[in-house]
Image 1: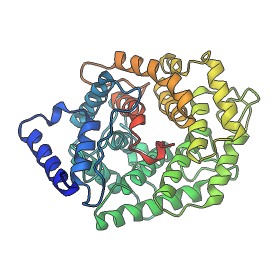
Image 2: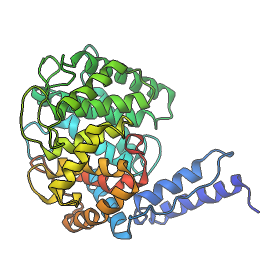
Image 3: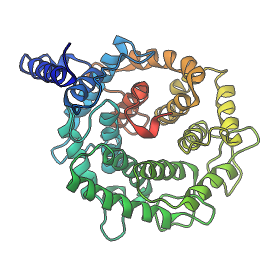
Image 4: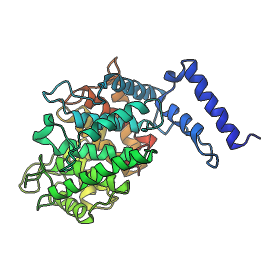
Amino acid sequence: MKTPKTMRMVLAALVAAVSVLGLWSALPSSQRGALVASASASAGDPIVISPRPPHITPQAERAIDNGIRFLVNSQARDGSWRSSMSGGGHPVSMTSLAGLALLATGNTPTEGPHAENVRRAVNFVLASANRSTGLITRPEESQRSMYPHGYALLFLAEAYGMETDVERQNQIRRVLQQAVRLTERSQSSWGGWYYTPDSTNDEGSVTITQVQGLRAARNAGILVSAKTIENAIGYLEKSANPDGGIRYTARSQGGSLPAITAQAVASLYNAGDYQNPVAQGALEFLKRRTDGDLSRLVSQGGHSTYTLFYTSQAMYLSGDAEWNAYFPPLREHLIRTQRADGGWQGDYVGDIYGTAVTVMALSLPYRHLPIFQR
């Protein structure tokens, strides 16, 4: 019988062989990640090559792989991605989301076929951090700087947990610590956040972006104030309408918005608050809006990509019953709407945004990102 060490040598040779023969690109991203992880595991670890997750078809694997190829080919020399449909390009937001898509498909800063792309993305986001204030943004995004800050916090926290170089870990940790402090200082008296850190106002979508970033940072071992999280959850609860949906802001009345409602469910589940009545009511609101078929939310126009991102998280975190009903029709819709170049259009923001979000939604069953794990 071959020992684990011998098997790892065989696997390492196999990785080298498929690379030399030019077959690496023919393997789906998920299989590349599993093969590399098994070949590089320590001598005492068991060898595990994960089977294809439930509901991930060969067609879905190809769609994910083509989406990743589109993103990799679109990355700028400085490591960033930018939207082609907006004046400023949202560089930190787009880079963070595209970087998350690479992580979601099994790439890390040190392993996987696109490890170099991940490293370049991390470099760009780190270089975008203000060492005095902790705010992570670029001048082009200054009018709504808390969006890129929140996405960057999420991306760096996930990458930090996958980094193996100690010096690099320390660099990311310092930026994360400052970024968390900035978010904590910027929380409004109501418990939410607004577009810029110096505002005293608040609204739902920015608030949930900060909550996810803080949760990812806490998961990665960064100190986060429990009171800040508690106040943020309270803000979402105060934003709930009698119909179960979540409105734009807790400060005033308004109609329930499906996109922010899906965000709230995902955010509360990220916090492990599965029995929260606001989360349960919000989920029921979304079901009523779509006659029980939540996959229909992604084809209703408007903020459909935004809604896709958070509804998919909410459904996956809800458990198998919800996910098994939601994902198959969504998967087929996303495969049908993928462009020939591998990209997807995303709302009014552009194809980098649409492709990154769609790849993450399709890749949820692989469970590579801790923030999206049950």
